[in-house]
Image 1: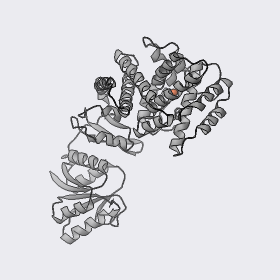
Image 2: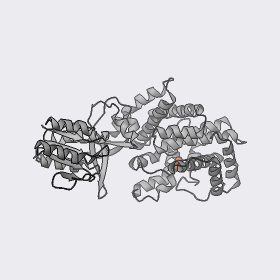
Image 3: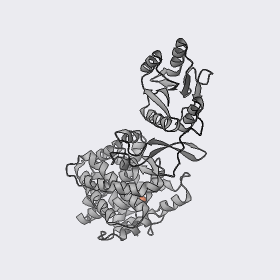
Image 4: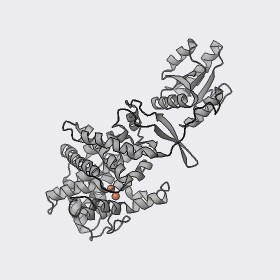
Length: 450
Ligand SMILES: [Fe+2]
Ligand SMILES: [Fe+2]
């Protein structure tokens, strides 16, 4: 096995490089995030056969300093520089690679430099990949199967790079990806149902824990949401397991909502947890809708319960689409996205109808819940999105539409890094929803704790 030194202050990159260079080129790397420590190792001539460094480390020209040090020691160790921000990048003194996350290029270059032939390289069969929510991976203590990350795209084709091997300890590694804003990792497609099934038991048990702290509850409930989406994605049949987890999740959402004093703090908590968009807007929507039925003259407790139920399921069928395109948010914009394939657009257009049909098969589905879900984008047949909000849909569907619009506006403020303004949101909603019945619902928002 060859040895080398990796100099980089980017922990996630280090994991990625260490893992893959070991797996594919049999190169063992010592990683140093401090340039001074790395220079010390070179001083001791313990840096091995190759040095890989980011062009800059903590604002210093790492590549230049390393090359200088090697020259002083009279060493001709090969230096691979990732990035162009060093004085020695693109000079004959080093091998320069682009700064993007192209692990395949790094593997190829290292193999070449070390004289490792393709035949020597561990040949691994490359599976088909399926996006898998990080929230679900976090339920495991040991990695259930090989885990991959999607890296650079070449001509529309994504590269997948393995970051963890089966049975490795999970530690904080996966959560670190979530912290970086990466919502999904990838698993071999053929394993997805098996792995979703494995998580469901753990999630159910945790949902039952009465001592769960609020923040944990938000997280575990998202895991439940993702399990249900995963199970329904495999087969639309409502199994006892789906029933069980979803019931507990809905209760759990109610529990979270009852403890959060303000809409904004709920949003902040969820944003801080880096929850997925669908789950976030379902929980926020439930919060807002439950406030509306508390205020409106005809509101009753049973409406609140029904709304919790419909909000949990209304966008379930969008989950696989948004898992594949985690950068997307607002539902109505989805149909116009070029990155979505025809099949995905079809799901977007039909997602209300699909969810309505699914909940209809629920034993003890709250009365009329399917109709509310069917109409949640303002159309009567659950297909497409209306721009002209009419009176011919159920009153609770209107509550739902206004609640979702409110949450979207709130998110837009956050996306633009503006402090949300309740008055402005209400004014916007009144411009968009001109019918009297909708305005009455919007008026209820004036008293929301914000
Ligand atoms: Fe929807
Ligand atoms: Fe929605």
